Length: 190
Image (tube, rainbow, N blue to C red; front, side, top):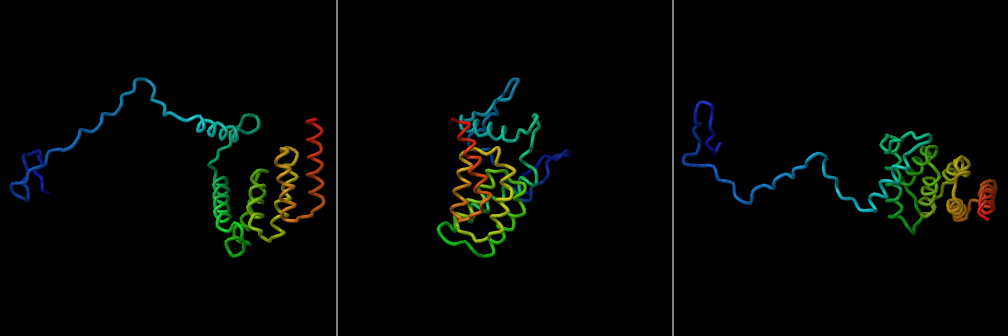
């Protein structure tokens, strides 16, 4: 090495004669803050706290059980929706076609049984907005709707009716089911 290092049995000779280590230059490193007792808590904005609270409440299951957001299946859903929304942004305003959309449609068909209503509506919205033509895909989405329709909000039911109209899916049973649920919600709120 270029520096003389103190060995246990004395100084080791340097390979370069007359070279001495340079002194440290610059300001001294900042001292680490000393915390007594508890660690200092980072300051979060009100918005960050609301998002964290909403996320935690969303993972709270029936009877107070906890559902982790980090299961492999959750990661697959997250990746699917990221890919779907990224492709949608690229293709917005154009007719979607090609192997990427076929792959996304196949992935959606496999995931649809594990999606909740807001996720079904988001996926349908993404496929509808690029005018993707796959009747079987839309029927798979609609096949899961009856499992969620009783707990659906009025806004979700209206969104579903709008998507059915937008894709011109004139499936009488689903239109009637949405209309009946909307009428029931209207009666309850009157």
